[in-house]
Length: 192
Image (cartoon, rainbow, N blue to C red; front, top):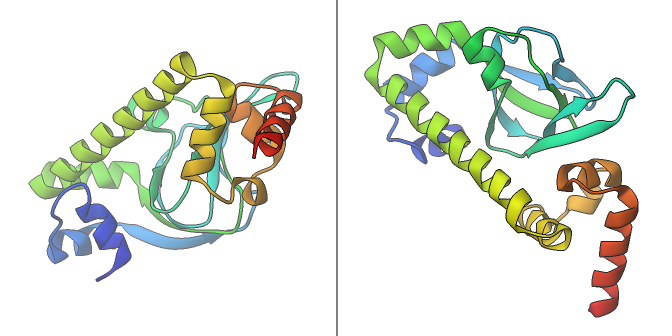
């Protein structure tokens, strides 16, 4: 079975007909590593289904310091959802960390389809629930786990973490400095 359909079915049973309607409003695209698919201050219009590769969402301060909010791996929905829903500029930058293959959907076309197709509307609701749950899990990690625990959890989710993502981005995601991350890695290595 098509892995994209399998992924969508993890949210809700999606018929071949519904899947075909989604394909009709989407375009399969390849992005090179380092491509910004949405920039700060830009009103987003697209949402993406990440099929292969890695992406991240981050905030860049006026001084150039980066604060990584999220990492995305296949299969993930990626987009500035607050900006899309409110039709306001994105506060985050969405960038590819490797070469990526995505399905790109125009969000307004997708919302129109939700009006016409109850299955797609239900799928959208399930996806939003999933995004909310992930957001809440992330918030709970930040308030209830120390940096080492957060690092170990991230490493469990992404076993090849060190080979995929630069150390400063990992540290930023964990809300620590790169020096603190080096100390955590060293301490873990010594304890093994």
